[in-house]
Image (cartoon, rainbow over all chains, first blue to last red; front, side, top):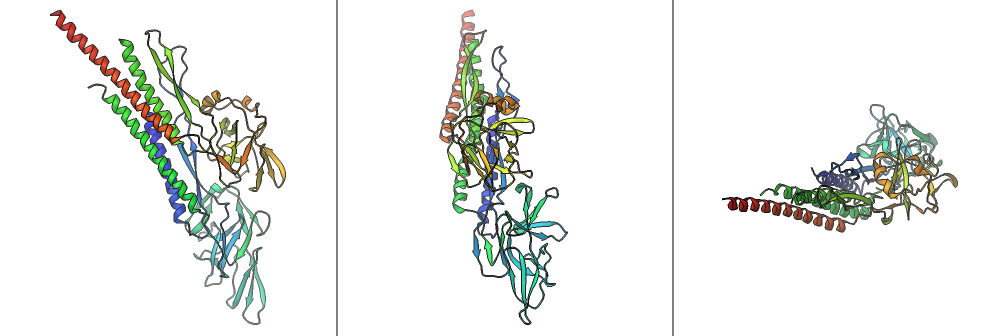
Length: 257
Length: 233
């Protein structure tokens, strides 16, 4: 049976998956803090000896053809552009670190920042209502809150303008980007086995916290459009291969008239 | 006469193999560092008949693909000759594909999780995302050299079998004297889609030719039977 059929089909599948990734990137071009996924193709090689006429002295043909594989990985270390939003409760990270959130069942979720919210009990949380792991409680009579680049949160209370320190937001870094599972709302869940490195914002490699800014999506429209065209053409080419393989089989079937 | 049908069969099966090679090239049109396979037919003399049977072999086309800038500091490409060697478990594999990332232990691994080997052997380990890779493969972290990426002169003829069984460790002995490594770039596949499509059409036509030979053979044999039958009456 012709291997070209399967290689062509695998090629089409790979392009399809690449298209899915591009679609996801493009649809999130305006999502704050979104990290684009990168599509990488890799050749697949399989150990197989092609059946051939075994004539003495003739080399044995080894087949190394079994298609292509597509690997998509979120490019988590790419920095998006920071836009000033002027909102005191918007925070962004300038650097490679992540904020830690405490999920409802106690698991650690990673977040690139965005709009913060003060919950009813005063806890500082993400806009989706997931509390920061730093466990910062904002008193009810606060008039202004300042988050410094090193993550220290200070607040000015209403009576007398007294400045108090509420706590410090820390950042984490992940050793291996691919261990992160993307969740809804720009959150990432790490596998339990992966260790996270804690660090003070502003320290080497962790990045600083920027208040009043929103990190833009890292998707570049131009790049995505170019990849889209490439994927489309590559898909068509693989479809042609399947068609040609079909033609060959048709020829074989029509040998006997 | 027997040779005719054998030749036709060989043409048909060679067309199929050739299409497989074309399929592999087309599937990898966007694979970084992929080098296209070229199939060629060699005539293998068959002792039983005077006709030669085509036997398909493939070689790797080592022409470099175009280097494109990606902006990812862990993408590396070779401008010129040589290959990287990556370690897949115990096997060593030659690879021109240079899009790497760091795993948890700091090893530089490619998209299939294979660890990049340094000059003289051993995994390349970098402990920071901020790396600078020199033209000769020296990896600088914070200005300090931590590793040297190996570019090896691997014979193309062994690459084919090496992809399957792995390279022998002696492949590490020969390094390219003056490697040209480019950081934040990947080498595009050197597949030209137009060439593959033309080859595909040629393959289909050659298969048709083979089929035609079978039909002519069939007609000839048929005529032999008819004519001989008439003569015998």
